[in-house]
Length: 320
Image (cartoon, rainbow, N blue to C red; front, side):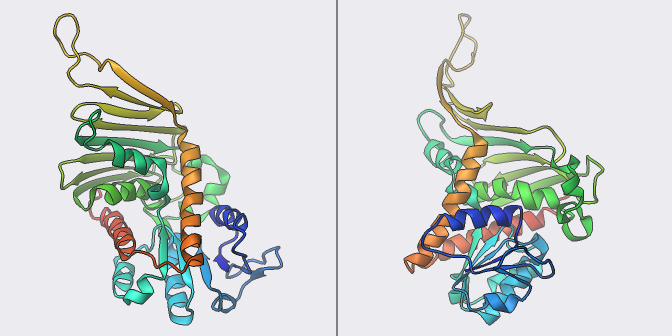
């Protein structure tokens, strides 16, 4: 196995893979850095004979690496999100042969999280009813750290829509994966921290065919906060402060016969940071298990990843 990338998220993926006894990392590639590891290489061709390659490089390089591995290797490719950063890249992926599409797996790891299970279990459930509105706030102060300024994330020339294509895209994908194609969108990106030249804050509103609307606020310029509200016709689910609560039913009244806060509450511990970390492990191990068992990736998975990618890129046109 080979991996493109050697630190930060690539390092996290490497650590997960190294816990899997069925796979070994033989090559760690970077185009110019001298990696302090006997497996380090600056020659991409060393990875062409690998059965599996992990692409965990900057977003704007994904397409280049996918093309090189498709054209020069028979390997299976695990590529970090977003798949590509241009509509030309989307066209390239859509024009791949069916055989090549089934070689590529894109890492939208929230699909493997308890958050996905919550959406599937609670839509049209007795307690929640039909889900009609989802509000997501997911942000932290990354833009104020020195390593942010030194990274490609803050470079508007290469990564202008930084926050939407690195952070919000996870939530966009979770919505697309569960509710299908978005029929309209509004995008309001901003540079709040004044650090770097890429957008560090974004508000995205999506509407889906089933009348569901979703609001996603993502930022690298605020204190840490993860707050999710899923509102249905009979109840609502709220995730914050390391807990998940479900309130129901709608028809709850006070002594004057006026609507009151739903009287029933189900509560459980729910630490989003841990849930997301575990989902990354599940996503990587799902990919590795498929390789180990010679199981093809479902083409619908590939197609839905492309739909998420296209929607995220098209948000640039909905920029207000």
